[in-house]
Image 1: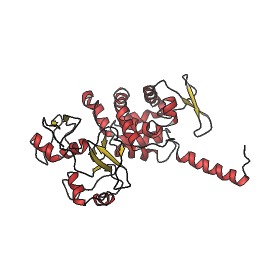
Image 2: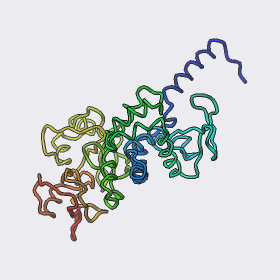
Image 3: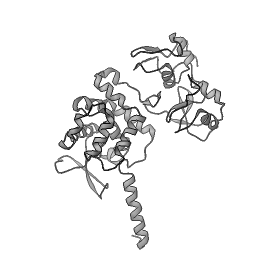
Image 4: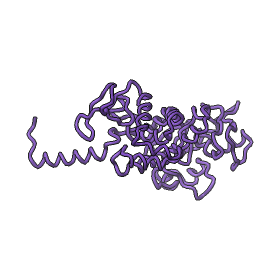
Length: 330
């Protein structure tokens, strides 16, 4: 092995220590696409654990995303361990060794991810977490703080990181669904991204010659993803489009509205109808016609005409919105 100088070795040791501290919960590089896929894959299981064990589904999902790097970490991939639970003296199952707070630590290994979720629920039933179950199942902030206080994590920012994930990806909605017991409406629930509804998962990036930023396609229409504090004017400039067109393409109801971080912003005229879906069932009274049109990549004017609705129509849960016409054209 190559000899390392005294000062170089000391410096590398310090850097290694800093890196370990900084990246402990998520030991893999993962994308927002991974997060959406993770939510789509495991939200039903998280709701089941909430019904059976009383742990908020939002907390379970946020912990899974944070601890497993949205299912991409070495521990999740090779040991199906989504919550970073170590062996401890009472563990009788398979084990997986990897460096964490110390070198070659023992972690629990599971046959499948569902077993990790089951063990996570059982783990939180220990006496040290008893006070958490006195909290409301919809009090995700209280649960996030309580997990830190009870010693689940050592990071002082752990509660804030959990609540940030819950609020950015609106995971608390799964708590409500679990409490209603409405399994039929919960099963196909799409992932929701801040103020606009999107489809589960993420369309693939496409080639677009007029900008250096990533561009995607949905329902045959190009779109970009709004960054933090970005305005429609910023986006228009970045894709070499007039501002009025960007606002028109996205069916804006107010001139004062600006996109939220993570929102899909279409950069060309959307299709009149959905190519893949015949209809949409409204999932909540707060859902809007614009939400639906942005989700499916459809022009609001066409959907309004087909469904005989006004632009600001109030929708109700269970309402059917037709997305295709018998003689549909783009």
